[in-house]
Length: 170
Ligand SMILES: [Zn+2]
Picture 1: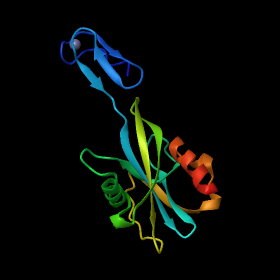
Picture 2: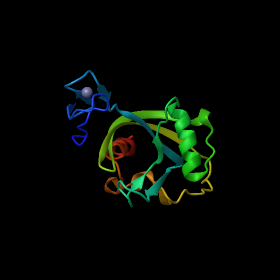
Picture 3: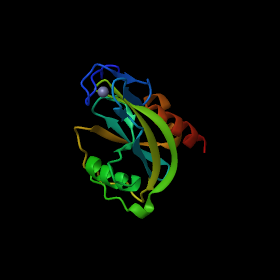
């Protein structure tokens, strides 16, 4: 974030990063916000088993993840769930059956830029184990894990670790 020095308006090396979310120019009135990004994570559930994906890309390649991703501009979080589950696994989600559970903050580093996210957790119950067609650039495999057999350390992201600590106990 400190790498950004040059103001795109006046061209001087006068851009200051506040260490959290805002650049401002000390030479003109240019301001740029790096706001929190919305993201969804979907707990696909069949009985007492939950569907995890194994990440096939950085960050956290090889670790367990939930299906989901960043909310696009002008998109509802529920529509993000529908879009991402189709893109990643060709699951056709019935949007009326998505159940919002909780939100937790997270950070996501991509190509040396740290993004602050707010992860919105949804539950989606399925009556049978779905036939999945994986987007292999993003996911190497999927695994059904029983709720009481989830190993927190295998999970990629802090928000999901915190979520599952509470979820397992509930
Ligand atoms: Zn400037």
